[in-house]
Image 1 (cartoon, one colour):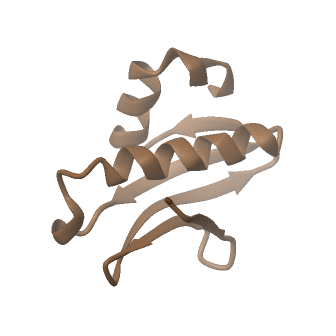
Image 2 (image 1 turned 120 degrees about the vertical axis):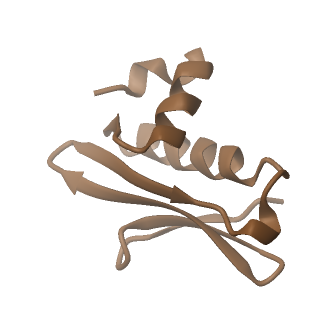
Length: 90
């Protein structure tokens, strides 16, 4: 089970695993969420953690009725590869 949480105090989505934290940082602007940076610790790389984190973050964005601005290259690439999230693009 992937437990992704929205840490609003830090403006980032987080996925903790094996004592490490992957994150997708964002900035809120009206009805848009601008993803500015995604980081997966080296110890978690190669396991699809970044994709799972971004998928869960975008699911939350849709639930909240927001639009996503992928300023981060990783989020942009994810959204380009997954047509099911295209409606979230700002």
